Image (tube, helix red, strand yellow):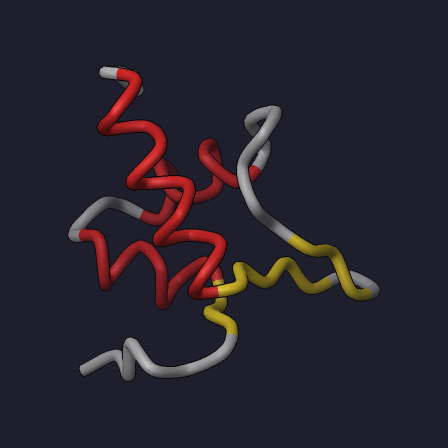
Amino acid sequence: MIDVDKAVLKVEEMAELLGISRTTAYSLVHQKGFPVLRIGQRLIIPTLALKDWMKDSVERGVCL
């Protein structure tokens, strides 16, 4: 189970949390405007930024 109170998520954790495949998760993190940080080779997603991104996407009616 993923701790949604973590400050950041790995791509695999985000995929599990959202119920999407790893392939789809990696596609998301490479989309322009997606809240992802690169630290060396690692990609991390700030949890609060992910929640804001999802809220904004729903409000705009964005289909991914």
